[in-house]
Structure formats: C-alpha cells, structure tokens
Image: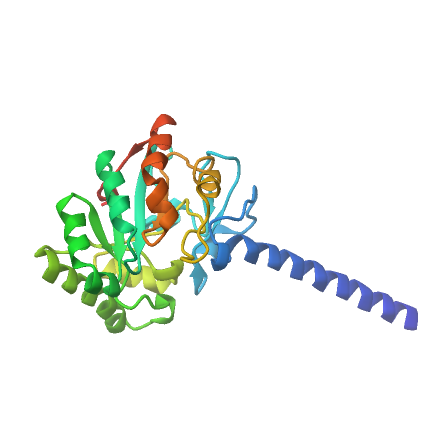
Length: 280
C-alpha cells in the first residue's frame, strides 16, 4: 500500500511538473517583456482560447524567416472586431507604424527618411507627445502621414471596462490633435503595451476605431540601452514578410540613425510601403 501511494505521488508530481513547463513555454512566447521576439514553429494554442481570453498581451510566434508569424489570434478572428495585425500576405507591402510616447529628438530624423523614400507612416501618439511636440505633429500631418490614437495617458486599457472611461482616453487625444492641426484624427487605435481584452476591442469598434497590433517589432524602446544598427538589422531584415505591420518607437536613437538605410534595404528586397488607410 505504501509503495502504491508513493508511486501515485510520483506520477502526480511528474504530471504537475510537465504542465508547468508547458505553461511556461506558452507564457514565454507571448510575454509582454519580449512579446514580438520569441521564435516558435508551433504555437500550440487553440485559436478560440487565444482570441477570447479575458486579458491578453499581444504577442507573436515566429516560424521560418520571411513568413507571417502567428499572433494571439488570427487575422480572420480579429476582423470581426475591426482589428488587424497583418495585411495581405500575398503582397510585398510593408506598413510602417511608430509609437510616440514622448519626443527626445529622434522623430524628425525618421520623418526625413520617410520623406526621402516617399513612404507614409502612421504615428500613434499619446497626450504627452501632443502637448510637448505640436510642431512635429503638424509636420506629420502636412507631409501626409497618419496620426493615430495611442490614448492620452498610456494606461493598461485592458483594465478599463467602462465605455465612458475608455472613450475619454480616446477623445482627449483626438480633441487635442484637432486643436493642433485643425483636422479630425483618423480613427486608428493602438493599445498601449499591446494589452487588450475582447471588451476593449468591442468598445474601440463601437467608437468607430480600427485597432492595430503588429507582426514585426524589436526591442527598441529602452532609451538608455539602445540596440546597435547590426542588432536592429538582424531582427528587422530576416523577419520582414509580405503584409507586415511594423512597430517601431520614435524615441529610438537607433531607429533615427538607420531609418534611411533600413528603408533602402527593404526596397532592395522588393518591398514597397503601404498605408493603414487600406484597412479601412
């Protein structure tokens, strides 16, 4: 009897250990700290469970270089919420998007490169950026770029379940943009930190917004720990793919320095640059 009890406990321990390792693997693929950079051939999560989880951090699983990564939910599943993470995977088109939390002297170098290549970008701005860099916002608008909504205070929007509070974060940003430029803000929304819930996606849709995640990014947001150009290219060149929605941060010194050459390299690979307006 004692032997059977010990054997049962051992089997139970091994089962719990195996389950823990499996769970840790899934978390690794989708963790927000490195949410676009884990490389997996098989994500192994049921799609319905992914898209209908109560709260998610947007993340990607990568397969072979140059192929479309898998997201927390598929492009088709997201469409019902007017949400997107990738474009037409049959066309070598790239959609350039930049998250703008604050201005530190790098955004205009990015704008210079975009102008040189006649490439449109979408800049997702927060309240602080609008308040402190209105002239740059005007330049974005005047040079034909899209300026989207990244919320006013950059909170974890997945924790906001009330439509009125959700809408205020969006409206405060859109209203200040209109004060600065005289134009209505296009209804493109990017959840701060990629944190979202199904309720958020539904509320954004109800307010007329399209939600945009991404299919390519790299760790470029630490101002005091910037990647080298070589490190940036090692992520951004092999993983580019048809229909890619690329997320970069305008605060990145590296991005400002390499943008011209990066766009040139992508063009040499046969890619052109599209507009998120195509999704609308």
